[in-house]
Length: 367
Image 1 (cartoon, helix red, strand yellow):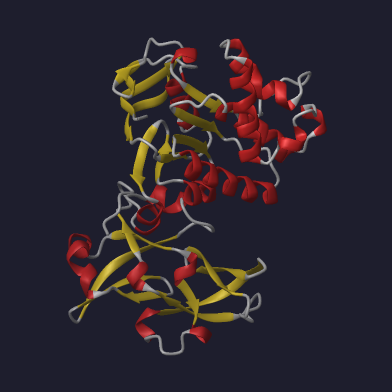
Image 2 (cartoon, rainbow, N blue to C red):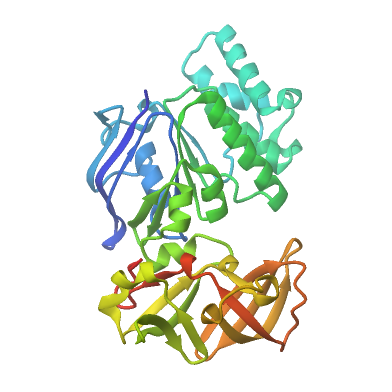
């Protein structure tokens, strides 16, 4: 069993810098939890407090029900994989993997067994005699992960371990870490600033900003039901569009309106939007939920606006189209079969069933 509980934890650095602000999080045994957010949001500091590498200013951290605030890092039965690999350059891969076990005076037979097992899991058996400088970035990261595996800890901690790899290797290592979790069935806490990594790896994702947890949810819920504008804008690529306008009643219907924009609000959205009639509001919609009418011929005119293409950005299997309408700018993510060109007027269909509305005063989701 390896449950981790973070209860009302704060971290204040010298100069009264509040890095982590009253964070609470329960991580179940065998769960893979990802902490994600922009640089400086407190995610790595939170991880380092769990590891025992930073002291806790306020609150408690529990591992398997035992409070570990004053337990040294070496006695917490955790293993951490760092961004910079932290390998010993003068040692072979074998010795890097075995070093921690030798320090703990494991028998030679057990050291050999664990090293060989970790090397086989990670596909680095043929590299055991090589030095880190002779390895690629992906191989070095495997060694760093292997050094954690041989410990057989209760909890694995990953601090942005893929950020030094190129794009292709990042995808490959994401898959390897997923396979590793499935094979080891261990509790894992993974820190990243990359929302794609978060969505692909986590059983649950913890979105942080300014030392505060914004939302905790599984990837699908986080994507489809963001609790505020920050989460909606941070999760997803390209980020959500946010359009300023007002909710205007017309003949028993509600419309989101601004200069060049008139979009019908669905009936099921009326009740929650009723308190905001004739008030400024934010409509959030993801680029993939805005279509070129060429590919949605049966769309109702009440869900269509006309906008001028400012920029066309081919992305291989898809195209990003950039527009401005009045005071609003937006992006549409369309098929690579789209023939739109810069300076062309285009009819855009909004899937209003996927629209979110946010209170501009609080940035909280209305629906």
